Amino acid sequence: MSTTTLFADVRRPRARSTSVHRSRRLSLRRPERTIFVGTSAIVRRLMSEMAARPNLNYEIIGIVDDPPTATEALSSPYPRLGSLHQLAGILEATHPDRVIVGVTDRRGRLPVDELLEARVNGTAVEDALTAYERLTGKLAIEALTPGTLVAGDGFHASRTLRAAQRALGIVVAAAGLMLFAPLLALIALAIKTEESGPVLFRQTRLGPDGRPFDLLKFRTMYPAAQPTSEWAGDNVSRITPIGRWLRKMRLDELPQLINVLRGDMNLVGPRPHPVCNVELFLRHIPYYALRASVRPGLTGWAQVRYRYANNLEEETEKMRYDLYYIKHRSICLDLRILFATAAIVLSGCRSLTPAVDRAAPASVPSVRLENSPRDVSSSAVLGATGRRLSSRALPSADTGRLRNSPFRV
Image 1 (cartoon, one colour):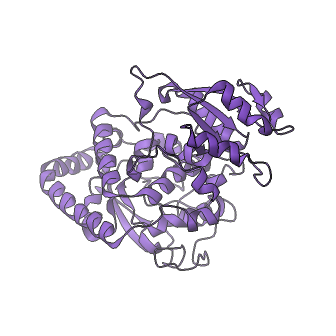
Image 2 (cartoon, rainbow, N blue to C red; image 1 turned 180 degrees about the horizontal axis):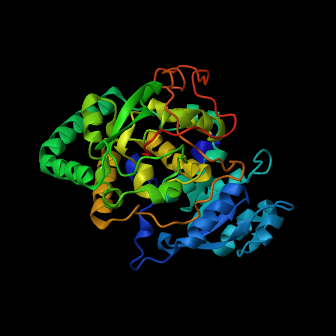
């Protein structure tokens, strides 16, 4: 029996798109008593998530691991219950509802027999990576391996799904342009009345299979006199009064319905990045090239679960959500994202998820990005066609800085 099979959660939801934990329905349910086996980095991250989000309704009983790894557990607020060879007695004494396994070196250390017996007797046994994905709606990039991506579940979209997503995009985009035509005209008039300059902002973004396209948005910033930072937080002073309102209500994105009709984008998918930033992201964000295998979207899982990224660490955090979407994408998940987007627009919030444990891996450096008008070839990233990753056609980013166009996205 494989490790993956052993740690498959017997209560896993049927639909992948609903595998994200939905607040555990606090109501009258008692907390789910949980034991962690191992003290790996993903275990510590998962315990932080549970502690910071009581609505998940978990009660952490303690940690089981061998010294010297167990010394890490001693620094945590949860007790060390014993060593791995004592697991059977610990389970008998504590009667947990769930055991989450995150042993770093499993060869010869993992108490397979005890875990299998616990599972047969009704205790949910789950791998820490699976639990992290289920509870947070994102993938732990630092713990992923190429083997997991190649041989694991997900990361596959049928032709039927791709056709359905495209059909949904065409119908909604066409209907949206007709429905919002008066609003689009009013916004364009307001932008023209407020400040001279173009109504629309155009920027070259990376599309499916690494193909560049011109993304359309309502202009929300004053023209820049010199190159400026790419991050939203560094450009607050340039936002126009009308632009501030448009950004808050996400109305500046409405012209991208044209991009959807053109086939540049879907309604839902990872947000397209400026082509000038791609090389830097390829260097510092693991598995970044996978984004090009999916048509970018007007909205996405990362957009409804996270805020605007203002540094490379936060961009990496958003990539965790993008990978989750790529792995689990479906029409049901798309509809869920669309309804969440509507709720965000109506409420004026930036996301529907509280800011909890959003730290990126320490290995990701803090880099200041600046935009560039230079282009990128379609072979720059790994697309759905399986082309080999190459950055030869990308603009140079040796200094970690890229020049900006006059208008900020």
